[in-house]
Image (tube, rainbow, N blue to C red):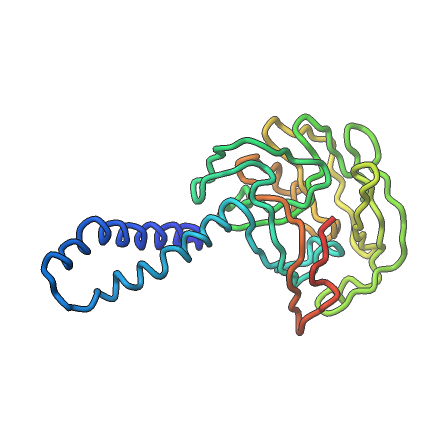
Length: 256
């Protein structure tokens, strides 16, 4: 059972208990003029229902926390980063069923998005959206092409990793320009052979997502497109980092 489903269930159960108590059980206690103490289940439900409801609303419709477990998004995101995701950036969806009820906001090329893995929706993935519906995308000689045009890459230097990221030390650090005036950094591993991908067309209602650690990421180049209904939100900030200790310089860092 997913945490989201569990949260919905406990919120519903405590809410029903509080509702029935207000309409039925409390009146019976008053009418019987008993001094008997209020049952614990009602006391707990009344105390916990507002807490569960607030957490459910925040997590389902506003922001949701995630922890980065892998290195596929180095250098943008590191193992041990705890991030927050804007849940309403791509529209409001009902919890659990993920049906979109308010279709506002749009996915932009270059967004770092969290989504349910298309091959196993119980797993959450985070990647960068590089292809929008109708785009022609190809990846040749470790270079990205969108609609036949090479996406500009500017060499920065040699990557120096820390903590778990030390395994990527020596990789080429580059600045990529997916959208004008808003560059982001990527890693290219010179010791790993590139996997060319011939041009594909992104279907309507789908997106093409790749990791910033290009040679160490399982993404749309391997398993295909991300359906719109799988999107959970846009990652926008790091609120904590823990990887063999706290790295304070990452706390409060925005995600570009």
